[in-house]
Image 1 (spheres, rainbow, N blue to C red):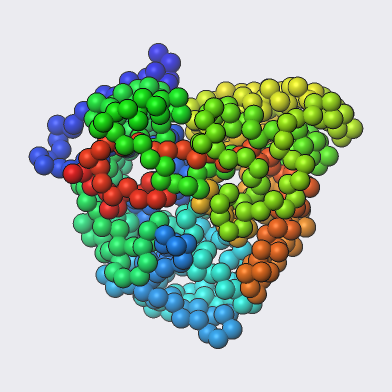
Image 2 (cartoon, helix red, strand yellow):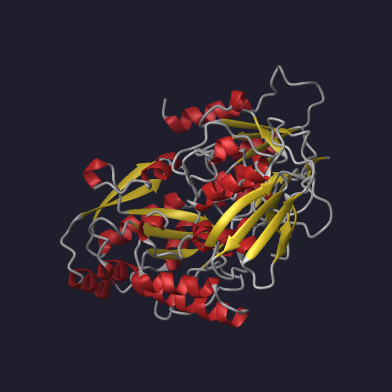
Length: 524
């Protein structure tokens, strides 16, 4: 039996009520857009891992529906006048799922582990002179220079999620996954019920202390839990997932196939709604440390050949489900602009593209593209990329694999004959690509950069200029200049912005704008 068929059968079986579940237990059954292959929110930037992590973990600060940073686990923060010294005080009564109290030293260890992997976190650690816990409820952070965006880093929404965990787990090397998932979030992960590739279970954490007051929405607010259990079920076959939703065997389907939206909209007991207007930013990421895409001229030749409309049509013929003409920052958000995009992303001039590939010095080296066959966006993007690359004279080896394999293989800097890669598609959370500080496409710090590891002094200078900008006008100037340089150096190819509706049963209440969150969601 093929793996995809097995997983679909397993998931369908798992929607049946458990014989050991307590009578009257309220269960919300959810199908994520792709299997949850990575559980640790620090070691990977998968959007599905980020969504999972917000059930289990909480954060010091959070982002509300107005994109303002709000205290979450923190009671508040006190700055000195020149923004070089910050003391963060924890709310009283916070506890981890193992019933141990959340202490200042847990926070320090967690932030250091997160900062070693996250692009915004790296900037924080580079700016920090000292981070300490003077007592159980306080964390003190002394900066080398004024750093006004510190709390924005701790409250960011995109991957990597700045999860707070016990010190003993946060001591784990950031390149290795923690062996236990223990947070202080509104749900508790149930490891005994996990079936890899098929099922993940969370239970309401009775010891959770909701935050009171302040802004709410997105990742901020009290996070009141209205169901006893959340069960994630992996259903790789779109038709299987749709049928399960229509029959009421599942409650919420994160990303229905575009081809099935019409049928779902006709179902009286199903609601189809676009709740995340930022969607996903589709890109192709180059491996810049091995040939042939260590050659900037070749990367730029391929970038200039990209027709975003062709890539987006591979996802859906319905243009209401995508946007083109987008660059580095998520369309419809404050830093989105056309800077550096003139002449890009229109219909492909194949004669010009072939000439530019030849002039780049490309010698016919094999190009491995990792194609995630089970991913609704990345799969089609890989197929279109392979076709485009062949047409402009590149020697393509498209390797169909599942998303979990892509997530693992993209860590490798090895040559192709030892499991390496040249290109992979990625659908990045739109909420994580709104500013140069948060986006993991806006660094050129080599080994410290996101997969592909580009090195660029120009990118780094402009990234630093954004972080140190004294006002909004200076931030926009730096962000625009950064986009211009990224389009000149082409460490990745912007393919467009996907806006996917979600679908859920009509009796489900409390689904709010943004990526899926499970607090405040109930069943009528």
